[in-house]
Picture 1 (cartoon, rainbow, N blue to C red):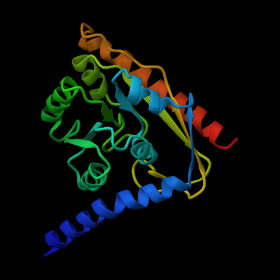
Picture 2: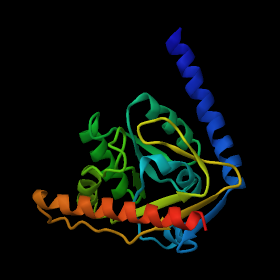
Picture 3: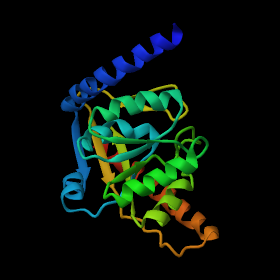
Picture 4: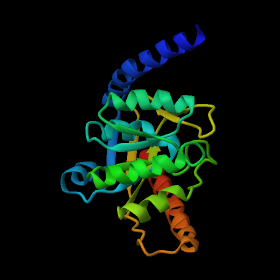
Length: 219
């Protein structure tokens, strides 16, 4: 019975989540730096692996809706809730992580890139440590040839959930700033021992962009 009730709960979340998210985001003042970055990205390219901290995904899901982006989502229960919601907002889902189903997920993400899709990864997911980039996204960039596009988010006012990542939900009528960084390309010939420098580069970029976005959001 508990499994049946859990399935019902997941179905309800999958159906109502997109509605609630759209209604919330319609009240927000969403600002991109540089202005029009998401529109330019999806209309002019180039394709990329979009990278952002796990706690900040909510508004990015809204901004990227309907673009067919393939998102790497964990096989954990909370990942299932996220997968149900974003599927109903026009995303594709690849299940797996660095700890569960990682090899298969990586192969599937590479295939999605070969099929011309944008990819999205939270470098600190699915279980942290918070805002510490893992190396999986660097390996994915090396294999696909796609640049990593880091995006930092800042909020003028938000709720923080008591989760490992401090998941953020912007409060209605607040301001949210998305700071788009410079793409990070990982050459295919890079040796394994050199990947760490790219991991540090991505982590530093995301932290700087997040700080810039936070400062801009309260102005």
